[in-house]
Length: 233
Image (cartoon, rainbow, N blue to C red; front, top):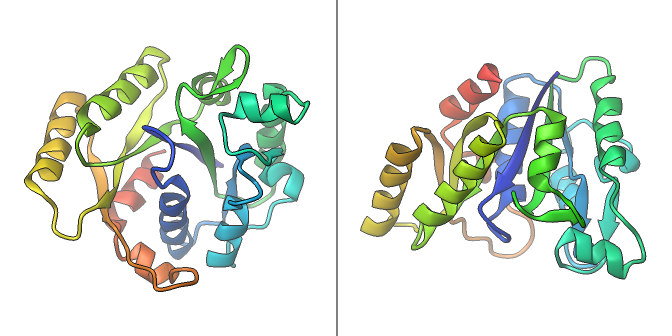
């Protein structure tokens, strides 16, 4: 089974939105695809797994305990959300959940969505970086293309390289409807400095209430590049 960890240059970048687009493309490729969110914070306001199931009814339905091993009400760093809930995040529980998913017969792909960026702590001394490294999976970076993107993205790239974590590529989210000279130059500069390909530059989608249609989300992606990334895993 192929696996990929979807991380970001920060919080609120749109990892779940990007995960939905990738999952839709993979399902169209005929891949039996599952999604998990190891740690979810702000559970009272946001339910990423539920959003994915609503948008992608063909997504393989994992048992709730495997789909999201940890969920906390406060929208904060996982270590703090857990502490204020009188709990502690045990990386071994997350690793065990992934290993159980790996045993599912016929499952082709697992999308693992992280919380925030790579240095987000899960407990006092264990970060998202440690988790990706221990899972031994490649990482996909989701970033914004606007002002500050070069520094934020390159710091994320450097952190992953320092941990010897393979990088599958970068997807830029929330591109302006008419990309500015800053956004275009940022993307080109990051590609040059990182030697990584921008797999897609996803424009902001306008939603007039409710949930966007999957086909509208998928139309924003370069399906050929996403498909090749998945095949190369």
